[in-house]
Length: 150
Picture 1 (cartoon, rainbow, N blue to C red):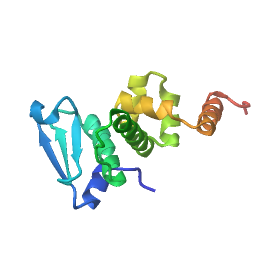
Picture 2 (spheres, one colour; picture 1 turned 180 degrees about the vertical axis):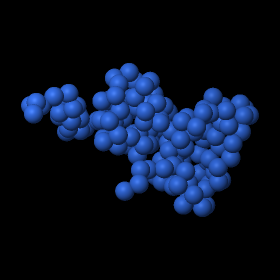
Picture 3 (cartoon, rainbow, N blue to C red; picture 1 turned 90 degrees about the vertical axis):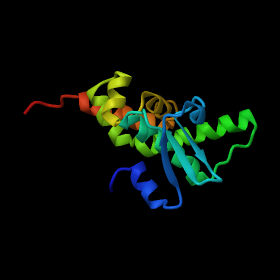
């Protein structure tokens, strides 16, 4: 199975337009915005490719869920958290996470290996299910066990 690509998903959502801008008034402190009524995502064109990939996955989470701002700070914050978790799970599979953790335990290096932002990596790690944590530990323990010598 091919890994998740937010660019492929966007291509399949032909009713959603993506626009790039460097207008800080439009961005209003964010990397991107999803405008439900306009069926458009507006993204900061100054982002790196890794940032674009992570941010696009997040905004597509809003598209898939049909999110609209509700005007309540608590509910809007909850909506953002749910979409962050969705994007992190889509972009960071457990197998890929284990492979990256075998290589390094530095968050910046792991995120670089996974081609996501450190923020998205931290979301994925923070919201691992206990069974996922246990599985990751077992996989990492196996990879450090030299096993019997022939």
